[in-house]
Image (cartoon, rainbow, N blue to C red):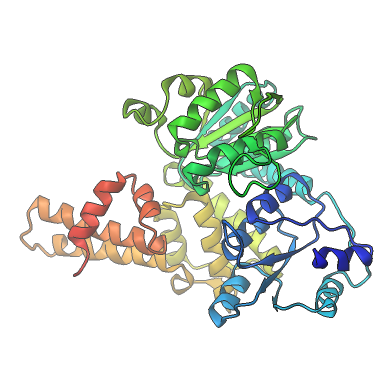
Length: 443
């Protein structure tokens, strides 16, 4: 590729990938990348949707988007997701070199072990936040599990910190110096699970021009974290069970088995026992995965003191990020933060406080600075409770339906209209959610 040749000639180390999936796998397993040129149009996952995933695993990575189809919307979206710059094709050599020199003015970038630093920071943050008896117990169990090599299952709602806990277990284990490969099972199409996890050989299917290493091989010697294991299709569940039993994998289209030495950590926000009863999850696999289980409680079930501690912790963390003094929270706003249900749990709390700190100009966070989701929650709550307090004649069924409608619409608003996430947030069967949404939505 002419792109690679231009940079190689200037002494830069370059790796070229034809799709976002392979590039993401490389970023997960190698922390040396300093700059990425990412095309918006790619086979498979497009560059816009891949961008936040790149930055999730390597926040310091500078990403320059490329496209021949520039639109204002695509530029805004890319910048919103964290792109450092934007280039329009066709690209001249001078444009490429200028972009590189912009981010590495002294020439060759200095590579550091960014990923290892991130994991260590995650462990320190988690240890620091575990100040209450409930979370101290979680960390104590994690310490014990880190010392053995069996599969660990982490249970908890979205945003409770399952991935951070997986980082903690990995960093406290004997595999800490080896890679931790993270796989989001919700982002893999059912037809691609086998090739993503186990890889494939050249010629395994139409378009397989080169062999691809799967996530299991990338994690060899280290830890493989399968997030949302409940989304793995039944056909793949059988292959996972076989791996747990004999510790070998076979690439798609391959004839030989490959020995793999990994620690397997899985996580889910669904009740796997119920999924077993429904026939959606293999019972034998469930038993093998759940030998060592940790349950992360939702934020709404944690005591007031822990919520206050987390609020203060994230306020200080965000003030460092924004390079501002730590803001004060007005009493009404603090009361709302303590009473809010936090369907997105700790992740939602952190993001909400970052947004509030960014919006407040006087270094005091008021109700008006809280997220739309929080304000909407209390607005809907008041609307539902008010008619009852005023003594209107309503049947219990009518009151329940009104509450249900408000919660469904609020969940949709908080998830940006994502019906699947909204149903999960409400712990409601997806088909039931769609039926009720059809009933309650204005036509």
